[in-house]
Image 1 (cartoon, rainbow, N blue to C red):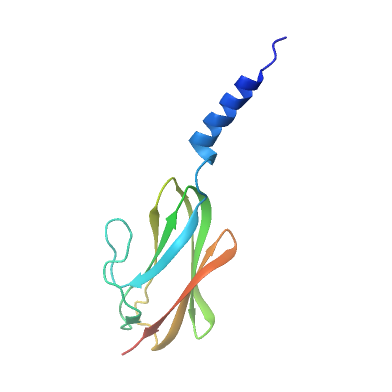
Image 2: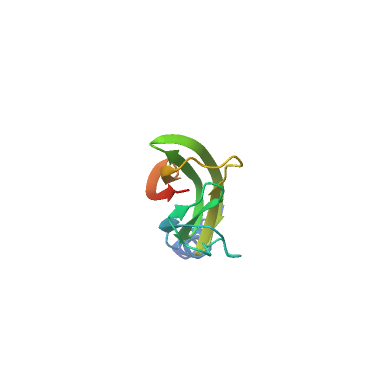
Length: 131
């Protein structure tokens, strides 16, 4: 029977660290709101004021590498009106897009989008819908 020496163990550990576990873990660095998206899922036109018939975009910027369950909870006057979940897996900086739209128009008022990652609320942005 052959045993693995210290060199072998160190080699395997080094390969694992470089290939899948040695970098910074996935984390949210910013959340932007706007009326449009760029091709990389970042917000094209930043704003926190929307018309009732507009689509509202949230772009969640992350850095690091890893997988996560990412959720956007859209609230109106403190009550959840929509929730969208995306399973993501990134190896570098990225942006994840969420959006909400209402064909009959959003009622004017104060809204919030909460971003939840792996069950933990990591950010929230307030915005307003005006006529």
